[in-house]
Length: 126
Image: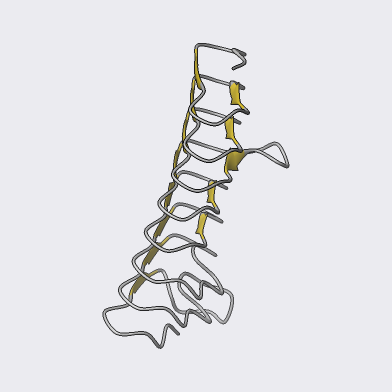
């Protein structure tokens, strides 16, 4: 399973399970397929298919993706291309997208696509 220092994995009994193939340090993976293949350190991938793939990132919720350094995604993800996809981006809600550095999107299907933008509310854009 995970090979980095301080790695924690739960539901890690199968070859395609939480924390499999992790090489970073101090990562947390909880849930089926959570955090598979993470090479960064200090990540938290919690939920079925959750993926926090950059240093200090957190992805919490089914299918959630936090792919930027210091990024956070809290909520379920079912649409491709959604997530906290840039450095220090924050996305909260279902199918939310914060895809530029320092952007924040809160609310179902909201999108923040400019640096320092804040989108709050269902289907909001900034």
